[in-house]
Image (tube, rainbow, N blue to C red; front, side, top):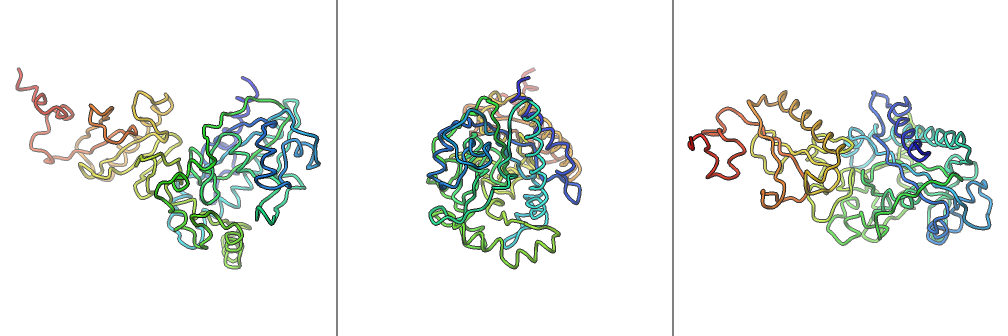
Length: 402
């Protein structure tokens, strides 16, 4: 196993097993991470000095402890995204003014755990014989109030994640990844060269519905400070709100130092996924979501055939069951079992129809693969014989062919 694969495994196992990723009620702050890699010599890091400001470090300057360097270096920017768990996100969906206690704890104690991830990655890379540094843990890292850029810093974790192919920006300046916008980011720079992750996007805002010309703007409505508009994100107004007196009092009540806000990251279509163009399953409202895992989401059918009618869908936008990866198929089958157990407990149906409409000829109307789980009850049909055979009614009554 090469260093890159080893490192990915180490980060995933650390997030899964470390006690620092456990909150006060035993729940986890973060789900399985996304990990990406960018070349330290990528010209984008020099571009950031123009886009963000001349104060923004390059990878070479980081390994040189913030001192100016002659040019780009050979090496790698290791970036990760820690998706916030569904229970934490759900708690914040209910809020309209201030963050929930769970969200505040994730922002505070979850970020302390993120520091432990940074330290672990530095140690790992050092043991491999390389030089490594975590920008956010360096003494010289600081926030900057720049005339042109506004509030910024000497190293942006979100911009590092963008460079590493992990996501694009929202109208609210958050990073929309394949696991959504509700997350924390981390990064480490090393002189060890690893293959970069491809950036699967052209525009720096293409994952945002509003920025690509579609109807949305829900994060604008969710912002209690009025800091988001169609023109973008007012960072100064956002900062004054989230670090104001009321937040300080709430942080003290929560037993935390910084609690963030996160309302624009929850109860929005991009909360836990990239909203795909014209796909209702990629732009789900949170009230439809029953449960979710790393690779699957279980939702309520919008037009239920029976009480409890549910759909199990992959997070990734694919049209056909036969396009699913093995890990996605496994996750969907697991979600199917769990959904069935929940329906058994709640509704006690007498049976189930389980089906997939795969392709237009098979009746598929939403081009995002989904499995129907339809509870059946005694007396809900005069003659239930034949079940799924009724997709072609004239051939359903096979028992009359005998």
